[in-house]
Image (cartoon, rainbow, N blue to C red; front, side, top):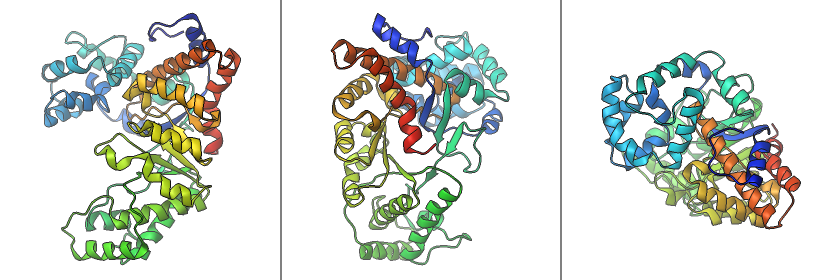
Length: 413
């Protein structure tokens, strides 16, 4: 058993040991291609980018300084001086824990310090060689494939990356409409019909490429009509400098139609819900009107809608076409993830739950997050066995389903 877990009783440890041997489908990542990662001259602070950066900023770190520390090529001593006070404020968080597990496992240090920052940087650069993704994902994590956003749609990284297509989520003026709903030759859309044709082409392209899903952001739902969407399009085109709400009649209507096109193409609608920026506009409740119209549309609810966890769970409870994805959750809070999984096992058929998604663009941190996921899942399963809810063997069956089979079957991987 790996040495990175917290205190475990005998039953929890038995589950952890079993989970470490299981193959995993990673339900959500943002990984660049390996060749792009290898072209980056990363240093020790890269392990504290993506998610850790938001705790650093929340702790008071200046925005521009944060960017220079985590992404710039400044002197390591200067970076450490700027980083250390805020690192000290956030090093206990779940975001930091995943980074620390990765730091220890791959680079031999429990925390970053003034004394080891240069050595860790050297080790990261030495490790950044061809085969990095295979070593981390396939060998260390036992991940078969990742459902990956933001990498090129035609490149699979020897099967480790299964790309997802994105539906435009940040559309608020004419510039973004013209960019994100352009015609097949890059021409600007002339009307709503052109916008919808762009959405349909996106779904057809995903199907032709053999990709399993399109990712959406479920903005506030108002039930806007086609006529209102056409009027909104006309206003945006006539007022190119004006900024509209993200949840405008045009964006809402286009998203709903795009989800229908995705379903018609036989693909999954993977939906980000909850936490991010103005999380109020991303509540899983926004999906209810669409689900009620489309009972057989395959919907994967990312992040359990945190902080709207029970709203998300109820979608899975009520609707047979809705699945619940625990990607990112253990990073937000292992406590919340533990209680949510316990509650889901009381409320839902086991085929409703997808148990892991690293949600990272730093590949080593996927390992850290997976350690936290295994620990959390093991504790929940051990608790249920101790309570008499099911046997140890049944717990292993549940673990295999939520870490592998459920995602593989739903996404036709």
